[in-house]
Image (cartoon, rainbow, N blue to C red; front, side):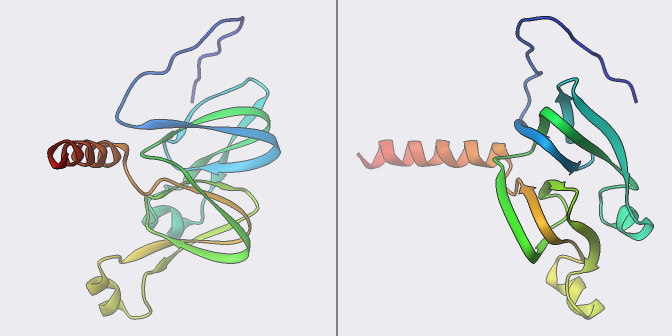
Length: 163
């Protein structure tokens, strides 16, 4: 609802966490951010609200409203892990609930059952999935940073013991 504004020259440091940060460089386009992903932006970036359809908002995990950013400038988003960019050119992308952190405003978004039958969806382990369609970009963060760090530590210790 409120955001602090800093002006002048210098550096601004963000709070450390097990999450990471990704910078979007906006050049006139519009992005819809995952709930809680917005962290900071330049003053030239317009911040608004994107309303989701009732069913998609309630059961898809994104909530009824998401943050919309547009204009020109940099936007910093919080990510749970390294960011992968997926470009859609009239295609359909099906994503597990919490992996997508941002999408361009040109894409359509909805929530669907993971499989056609209710029983299959429940036994599949993923009851609902997020579906993105159209022309645009989706940012994904499927692997949390703590898992990446743990895997690096295991690989480093394995390399030391096998030498």
